[in-house]
Image 1 (cartoon, rainbow, N blue to C red):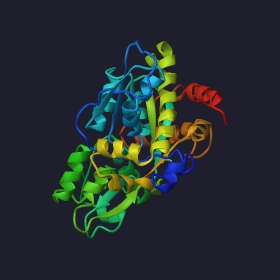
Image 2 (tube, rainbow, N blue to C red):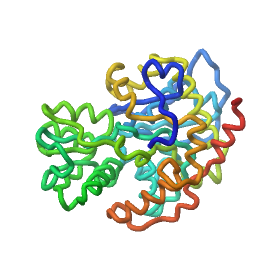
Image 3 (cartoon, one colour):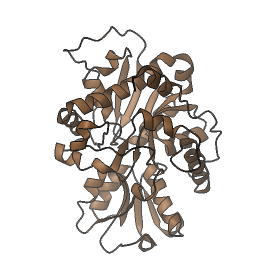
Image 4 (cartoon, rainbow, N blue to C red):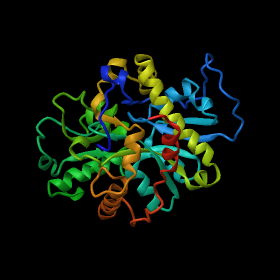
Length: 348
């Protein structure tokens, strides 16, 4: 997922636009504004925006608490999902107008009939998705015949299949256990499975098992896991101004995080249910995209740094692996007009 420059959550974070996080909270969010910065009145129909536990999506919590949606003149109903798959299904079913989700899972939804558009890249996973194994399992080949858990059909299942393929294996060579990500991490710690595919912060939970170790991660498959703001086609066609406002809010949020430093990180760590120091440990595992990274990623190319190219490769893989019924038409999946407009309105 190295579509752009690597930034840092630590000291470098204070002079960059990088953000990294994780989470396991449980209650839906509600909009709050910053009383010190009066925002323009917002009276439009709410945009139903979903997000869940992933390092590149916790900035939305900062946007809400700092009143940045209102400041960008968009009415957002921000909803937290404990289960990532639930948020994907909600967008595909029309229960959300926008969601934070991966390229892989978006393609799966599109192949199933959902009409979705990617308008923004939040980040690339550069290590915060991991396959973690019990003591004594030292190679991918050692997974043969072992019980391996992951949330079926989502990105860490995809990462697991990538690793197996690299080793000349398939899912048939292991005993796959489909479990929701939090439940998968708990099952691994309890010794009920031999390996697990999880993302931060569930990686921290899984590594609590004595002797456990990272077998491989998204850092070993650059460009394989990108994370996005995905909206319905209806939103793009009927409410383009609100889509633009969401994109503007995202970049305003990154600037706010840079300015606020630990204050913003504390907001995100609380949403993640971890300490500030634990939150900072996820530093290198997620690479947040700035506007230049976004523009570059949308361009055609011949490697995984190009989203159109990556989408074709992922689509083929999902079909071959049985995670998608058929390869969908991806010609209208990406719409860069909103990041283009933001770039044109921002001094270089």
